[in-house]
Image (cartoon, rainbow, N blue to C red; front, side):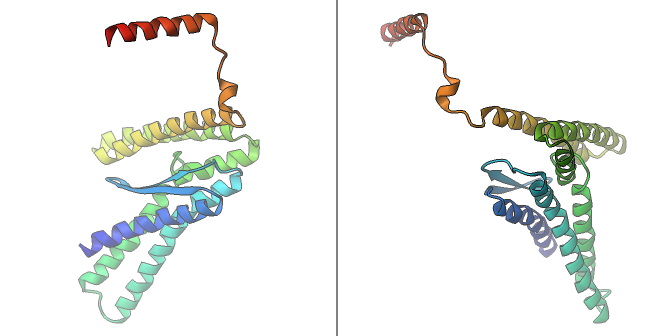
Length: 216
């Protein structure tokens, strides 16, 4: 029970690190969701304006995981010094060291929208000065990694890895579409997107309203 709580606390620390950096750059934390494969922080507000901001936000999570792994390792060394090497507590600490290092390393895989994919996008964004182009490249790299992950998962018989690959593939594509829409709508007002009603439109609405009255 304690091991499970500390495991999820480690994942929460990872997401809070992302959140603190995001808040610094004007994003709001909508929620942190706990699901079968881990945790995810959801933000609302404008997109980050510069690639350096995205890099800092993306790298914060893995760095937090490595820092927590270092903390657990230090506690494990203290346990060894106290002669607790055969105790369950020492085994729990070693497990937490391993799981936090694994969490940090896995999130650095450049499969957008994972942390590594966002780091990749920030680098491409800084080079081309074009966020959409950088996102397209990062998404395609993520798709390749997702397909390789799913094929490998089928070979080794790991259903969770298949699910992770599917999520990387689908979520990256969804974020790209959302970014393109947001960029197209930047600086526009509702009336800019509306077209004036024609006489034909008005006649159609009057006929439709008449039918609704008849059949009410």
